[in-house]
Image (tube, rainbow, N blue to C red):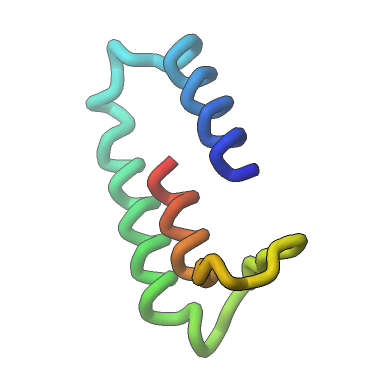
Length: 75
């Protein structure tokens, strides 16, 4: 399901994105990515805001909350 959402967002980004002014948004994008990454590895073990779970799967895949969060950050 995450892959489908990622593909849909990527398609919307390619179609309606403001590609001429990407340099204006670059510092903001880096700020959000760095903040999310710092939260993920410094605070999520002790103070989680939410926890992803693998509903409908038997758990033998080996995916954890960190794997799912990083895949969302990559999209």
